[in-house]
Image (tube, rainbow, N blue to C red; front, side, top):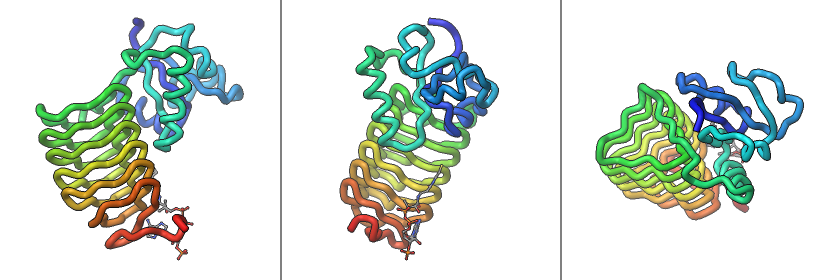
Length: 207
Ligand SMILES: CC(C)(COP(=O)(O)OP(=O)(O)OC[C@H]1O[C@@H](n2cnc3c(N)ncnc32)[C@H](O)[C@@H]1OP(=O)(O)O)[C@@H](O)C(=O)NCCC(=O)NCCS
């Protein structure tokens, strides 16, 4: 495989990945008006379907968790194998030796992961998040900047935790749930619901 990653999605997240200093060969995006332009200094080289004509390792840079999962499903349907995905950990991030990070995941600057945490596939952890002992971030989960998790927290598949939210130790945020900015989550958040506030409660948007 050639050097440099191929990013999927000419997004703000793609520019944040490029800003970590990782080598990027190009970006794929279905927006034809971007083809031939530079995004974050990297060339947009074609639509997503062009993935099979290329050899680079891949990283899906789509911020919203469920949309990222949809894009990975589409790439899988096109024949992209999971082994083709890279993992990007910014130089200033620190991952404890007993913790693991899956394929396709992105950990941006200043992220700290302590002991025995498990970060799944295609997870995005934005700058300055703190992931502590025994936390589990299931596939496609997203932590926005500044999130802090107590020990033994589970963040469910394709859920989204907003900027500067905090989660009490041992709590589970359900799959496809959303936690609002600055929330203090002290109880389990049911699957698919949106919770916010201090302490966090279900928002009316669930009704
Ligand atoms: C919680 C959130 C998902 C709700 O978004 P939404 O469904 O569009 O809801 P609205 O903005 O219409 O707000 C609905 C109500 O919730 C309140 N609300 C919204 N976000 C809130 C928050 N984080 N904490 C407390 N209340 C919040 C609004 O004030 C509004 O209250 P009202 O009905 O009394 O006026 C969103 O505000 C949020 O926090 N998203 C995370 C953003 C983020 O971290 N982005 C990172 C980008 S990299």
